[in-house]
Length: 135
Image 1 (cartoon, rainbow, N blue to C red):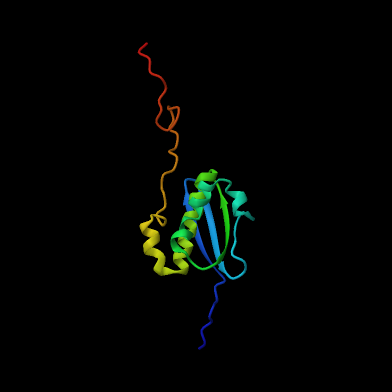
Image 2 (spheres, one colour; image 1 turned 90 degrees about the vertical axis):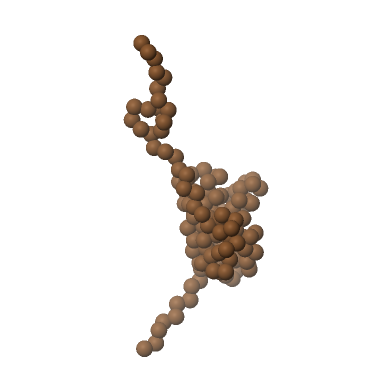
């Protein structure tokens, strides 16, 4: 009985932050570039701070050249950059298991679970009550 060998063309990782979800695909070969929602990385993340947050796992792992394709939706641009970083770290760990320790030490594999609290009835926001008056 011959087993089928499936050759994976890419490695996928899903990253989340608040309501942002990023699906990151890393594929070997082709030109080494990063595209976010089919736009160049530099166009999607306009500031250097957002770019460094999103590329943090690549700086730590210093892996070989990959073509990285990202689909991200939800939330704001800041939480999207953290979601991309989280997804990229997860994809790197799938490709290179030996890089798990340095990425975990840098806290890039931990999902930041802080989300907005829901509004309760009778209150103005999640915890803010209307102004109280004695009479």
